[in-house]
Length: 444
Image (cartoon, rainbow, N blue to C red; front, side, top):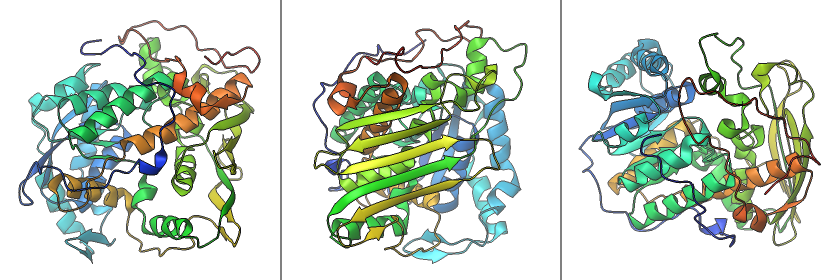
C-alpha cells in the first residue's frame, strides 16, 4: 500500500491519564482569519462521512469542501450527489443553530443556497483507491475529516498530522492496540504542532451532558460508587448479498461492520459512546476488565463475519469504582435501550438529568468547536488522547470477552495485536475470519 508507514509499537505500557485528555490552553497560531474560508477534505464518503459534512455546513461559516477520497468511486460520487441534493440541506430547516453567539433558525431556502456555495470539489480532487487519503491530505486542504471505517483511522490520522492538517476524526480511532498506540503518538504530535483535533464523540458537544458531568465532578451526587451502561440496539447494517464480482477484500470493505479488523466489534464501534462517557465522568480509564460475550443469532452466514452480537463487561478503576456495561445488536424489533447510570453517595444521575436540553444538534456543534479552535476564536481543542484512551478501553474489554481472561490496562497497552492486513487490493483473497472462542482465542 503506497505511503503506509510500518505499524510499530510506539508507546510503553505506562498508563495515560484521561483527566488531561481534552487539552485546553491558549489558541494556536491561527491558520485563517475569521473571514477567510477554510478548505476541507473528506476521507470516507459513506453515510457517516456524508452526514458529517452536512453537519459542518449547517453550523459553520467560511468553509468549503474542496476534496473527497474513498476506496470506492461509487461511494464518493454517491456522497457528492447527496450533498448537492436540495433535500439534504432542507432537513436542517426550522431547527436551532448557534451562529455568532446566538441561536438562529434557518429556512430551507437559506440552507439550500448556503450548502451550494460550500461545495467546491473539482474533478481532479475526486481521489479513489487505497492511497486516496494520501492524495487528499496533499491537495491543499486545511482540515481533514476522517470518516472511514475505524481500522484505517490510525494510518489516516498520522498522515494528516504529519502534513500539518487540523482534523475532525470519527470515533473510534482504531480496532487494535498497535493502531491505538499509533494514533496516540500522532495525537501527541498534533498537540506539539498546535493542530486542532475534535472527535465524533458528540456528547462532549451536547449541553445537557456537559453540564451534568461538570456538576457530578463538583459533587452534585457525592462520591461516585458505581457506574452502569447499556447499548441494546439492532444491527447497524448488513450488505445482504455478495456481488459475484467482489473478491474477499472488496466484500469485507463493503460489508465492513461484520469484520473485527475493520470495525472493531460493537463494543468498540458503537458502545464506545457509553464507555467514553463513563471515562469522562471518572476522569480516568479503567485498570482492569473481565468480560464475556458471544453470538446468539449472527451465525451460519458469510455476511455475519466474525464479530459477536452481545457482550457484557465489568470494569474496575484505580480508585476501586466498578463499572458494568452491556451491549448487544439483536434483530430489529426486540427491546432496545441506550442509557447510563452514575451512582453516587448522595444521589444518582443518568448523565443528562442535571443539565438543560437546549435542543441544539451536538453533531453540528462539534464542528463549530473545531473551527473556533482553528481560528483562535475559541479554546484550543485536541481531543486525540481522550478518544484514544476510550477506544483502548473498549478494545481491552473486547479482548477479555474473546479470550475469556481478565485483561489489565498495562497488558493492552503492551499488546502486539495488529489486525490490519499487510496488503491492499480490490481482488485480494483473504482467509475466512474465525469467530473468537474463549479458551481457544489467545490475547497477546
